[in-house]
Amino acid sequence: MANMIDYLVWRGELTLEASPWNEVDGLLLATLSYLNFHGIQHPKGWTLEELKRLDAVIPSTSSSYPLRKQAFEGMADSIRFGKSRVHHFIAMTDETKTMQFSAMCVDLPDGTMGVAFRGTDNTMIGWREDFNMAYQTRVPGQIAAEYYLTRAAQATDRPLRVTGHSKGGNLAVYAAASVAPEVQDRIVSLQVYDGPGMNREISSGEGYERIRDKIQSYIPQTSIIGLLMDYYQPYTVVKSIAGGISQHDPMTWQVYGKHFEELPGIDRTAGLICETLHEWLQNSTPEQRGAFVDAMFQMADGINATKMSDITNEKLRSMWKMFGSRKEIDPELRRVFSRLTAQAVTLGFGNVVERVRGKREEGVEERAWETMIPDEEDEAAEDEKKDENPS
Image 1 (cartoon, rainbow, N blue to C red):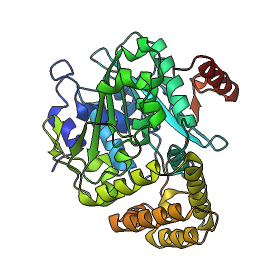
Image 2 (image 1 turned 90 degrees about the vertical axis):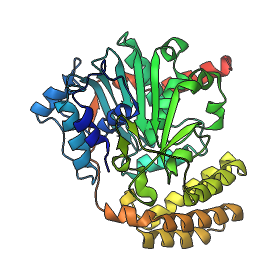
Image 3 (image 1 turned 135 degrees about the horizontal axis):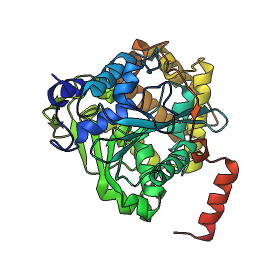
Image 4 (image 1 turned 135 degrees about the vertical axis):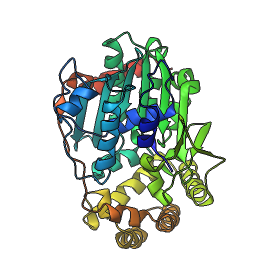
């Protein structure tokens, strides 16, 4: 059994020229984006070697932090990644906009620049933004990602490698689909690791069509997140040594040589949940989905959940009962919620979050590129422009 940390031991001495970029490299870059660092708001940034020497990683109580830091240290010690320069890091949470957003740029030794978007953290704000994707065409994090990639491209003439895990994968694809065609042409790899798909309005647009063939999607065999909405096809199924929803953790994904260990398809339980979710998405209106999401998070408030790790199996069942008693919720949506909750318990969702109960990501505010994140006036102007020039 081997994961991406073992990959660095095996292949860390190989330069990107000797062994070109692959899907495991992209996952390492996506994983790096989950860490917070002192000092990389500096315009020139720091190499991974320097960041390790300066002990610049900000400690976190997240259960995933030790392995993520170990992966960073392996990258920093390697010939393959050690000279990579990290810069223009940003991490922000905005409760008023229901937005959790973080990204970084990495100048790679092969002359390309990586742009990595962070996935969802443990906060209910971050997860609420994820669920809002079910009924909103664009969420604030996606708008921020488009601005970030645009500004990142303006700052360099390097070819671009865009990547992200979980929601970070969705942000990567949304940004790539939304930037100007001349920026899209510079994207040489677009890698998504168990990231939710796009709203149909986005996936049917011209911008998405221009980058569709660049998307490389990787999901574990019990993928739920990576098969939400209009998901990315074709996808590669990766073997994970974990069970249930724990497979979303990329540290459990198996690597052989310079590639993932692949499986022929997803398993039956994941297929049932995805079937239920897609049935709901196809047979409900945006207003119904919005009411569903509002009610679900009101239920989370009712059990005093401020982090996803607060939701144990017992509390998930309590939410199920509370949701079923809400008369203002469409009966069909109550039925769907009951099915999803039962299937989530079967998958062991509550057991997984119980394992990390009380853990949390440490938030930081580093706004060196704050101008890349639009305010409400910017968003209004952009919407007005799109109304005047419909695609």
